[in-house]
Amino acid sequence: MKRTRVAITGIGMVTPIGNTTAATWDALRAGKSGAGPITIFDASGFTTRIGAEVKGFDFENAIADRKLLKLASRSHRFALNAAEQAFADAGIRPTAETAERWGFVVGAGMMGVSFEELSSVHRHAAADGEFHPDELLSPDYPADPIAFCRSQTNTGLALLTKNFGIRGYATAVHTACSSGGQAIGTALKVMRRGNVDAMLAGGFDSMLNPIGLSGFCLLGALSTDNDTPERASRPFDGTRNGFVLGEGAAFLVLEKWDAARARGAKIYAELAGDGNSLSCYRITDTPPDGDGPIQAIRQSLADARLKPEDIDYVNAHGTSTMMNDRSECVALGAVMGDHLPNVAVSSTKSCMGHLIAAAGAVEAAVCALAIRDGIAPVNANYTTPDPQCSNVNLVTGQSRPMRIRAALSNSLGFGGSNSSLTFRHPDLAEEGR
Image 1 (spheres, rainbow, N blue to C red):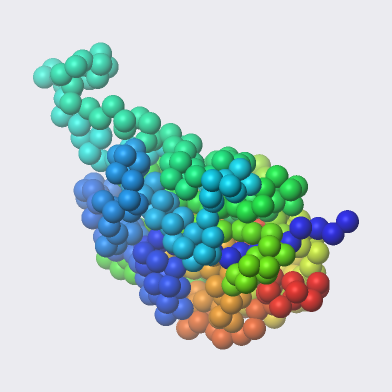
Image 2 (image 1 turned 135 degrees about the horizontal axis):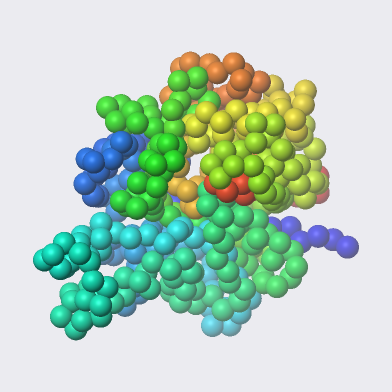
């Protein structure tokens, strides 16, 4: 039986290096950094005081519906805007007639608490210095009653489905750093099952808040290069010392291949394969032998019906932590074998930082753009080789023009969740290869 092919026809992004897809892609190709001192709250008491913030974003006009904006957190507004971009780019969106045949899968960030909300609780503690929970229920307590609703993982899903009128399959995925990738992989499977005709798939997150930053600081996962934030994220570099926490959102519009062709849609790439695994090693590290990532990459290639030698580019998870980067290099070597020197590899976290639940979605979009334009984006800030990462062909110095027949995007999450997506050039999909 002929398998449903899935086309990527729309992309929308809000990232630390651009509030649109075009701006983000231009900055990535140029190797520009989005990292800098944290400005959205006072981070002076933290060991890490830098992050990759979204800049110049119009929060008050992210979408036209003012009622929905009232319910939307910082990251939800990124998501609503990025999704609107994706629909506009695709030239198609749900209508009253098609709403039930549209589905939606989102990689959602963790519950977040803003600095203002924490400050409000602190300011209204009793004079004796103790906090009394019953005061929160007092009619005189000036708290935001909707704040709790905004903090739920599925709130973004609800806001997006409401705003865009999606009435078909809908679910939220939260598997830490793998969320965005697994959301897109889930969307692929749902379309192949025939549950829907088109999907909106992606992810959003912002852990740039006191709770998020303190957690990662305590784990020792963040770079402490506070004086040189633009160089702090340096995946695979021998001097790397942790990742830079970022924020943002990205969404893809996915359509059945034949339907997209019939309406004359532009197609960035085929979403061809999905692989998932769970390492069960440590909460913050991937296995030194690459075991879990190896499974996910092999599954993704098999699902796409491709061989390792068909892959020309890998957008690596590449967080800039010592263990993660080495594990991923081991995994790529195990899967790609003798073909690995021919595969261009880069981590775009070197420019954007780590967008956590949004990372896999943004990096999937990057793979589609890389295939469209024939450019492997640079792995920025690389100056010092790590002997344990010497097996990979890193894109260093500047972005590399090249034909990309097929690409992989890896997302390796805290807790051991691994996602690998495979993308194929539209010409090869047309040829049935």
